[in-house]
Length: 210
Image (cartoon, rainbow, N blue to C red):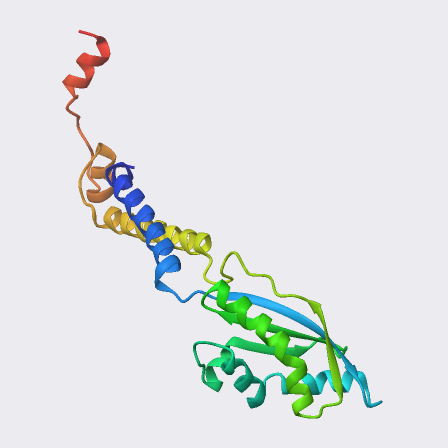
């Protein structure tokens, strides 16, 4: 108990500082990911299976022509590899719905590319003579918060790490501390009997009020 009472303030400071460090890491040290999504309904115009057209459209929406069309309308030009990381397109469970996801470091950039993508979808399908049309099902909404990193989660993780480090440090100090604090310590450590104890007169006087 003496070890805890002597070191609890340090433990609190370490826990708080680690929590603050986690918050700073999440807020300023890690790349943010803002995600916008959009869905379109793909219809066939040449009599073939609409679900197959949707699967084909999902592939064409991440083709070089689509990426070139996106870059032509942006101020900053991305490489194909960068656009592969930003744009993810998939057919929803074998239906005619195709969902596009846009992962960007800013919310405005995510929704801007998503809106641009919707505008260019039909144009790219026509360039490939895909025999399909698209109809927007859901428009992208600008995300208010990043999907990663979660500042509160990182703060909590940092505080937990600080608490564990503090607790481990206190245990180590307690194990290494060989200070004799009571008669029982002498008996436990050296296996010798205690003949008598010296009373703390100051505390005794205060207790008696004299």
